[in-house]
Length: 269
Ligand SMILES: NC(=O)c1ccc[n+]([C@@H]2O[C@H](COP(=O)([O-])OP(=O)(O)OC[C@H]3O[C@@H](n4cnc5c(N)ncnc54)[C@H](O)[C@@H]3O)[C@@H](O)[C@H]2O)c1
Image (cartoon, rainbow, N blue to C red; front, top):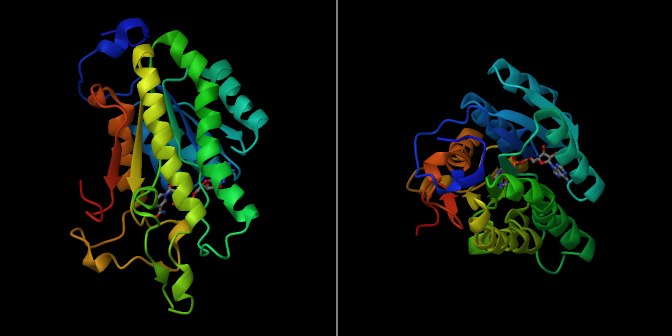
């Protein structure tokens, strides 16, 4: 089976094996993005780790797994930074097989306190950031006839904000993810479907993962009431990363335009 493109996208699904693949992961400095970079590397992929923060730890994790790694400082709200990530990847590794749009920020204020500044920040990083990165990798994926794009959305994008409260109970009204975040994550799902519909003919797959409450810096100090879930614990970044590996691999060669909840059973169906 070819690993270089052309009619490869018509291949039937097979076992997970990312040997020789090249992946870009945004927001890869910590949390879910770091776990995704490590899991992709474990399965054989070389990784470009992009983030506002230092990605040194992620780079050494990827290299520890025997894969090549490149760190690129990047703010996904800046087109020039996005172009730098994509060009650096092409210069260093010659291709892009996988893009994981993971960078995100979360505001927790209610509707009346959501200023335009807060609104645009969440939308710019989460939704427009995914658009910028996807647009930037598209020509090269199209030319090679292959690409797996995975967008990290959220259950918030499906149910209008995951409910949580600050663990100390002091700020009970502001734990739930805010309207800007929910709208941005919902937008990511619609964008995912658009890209999936358009990309299929070029061998480009696009799917989303919708995590529930996951134990990272983003959720520290908030109580997600997980004891009432069918799987009664917070997710760990690795829970999300393994779903991404499936969608980034040829194990999912008949799956596109899907939003996979990885949420312990919070949202069913
Ligand atoms: N933790 C959760 O419960 C949860 C649930 C659902 C979805 N998510 C989503 O998962 C993704 C990862 O979140 P996490 O929990 O690991 O949070 P996190 O805050 O630990 O990590 C987010 C990463 O994105 C980076 N980032 C933020 N803005 C950026 C920008 N403009 N450009 C480049 N990088 C930027 C941060 O520096 C950070 O490294 C986010 O999209 C988040 O919305 C998280």
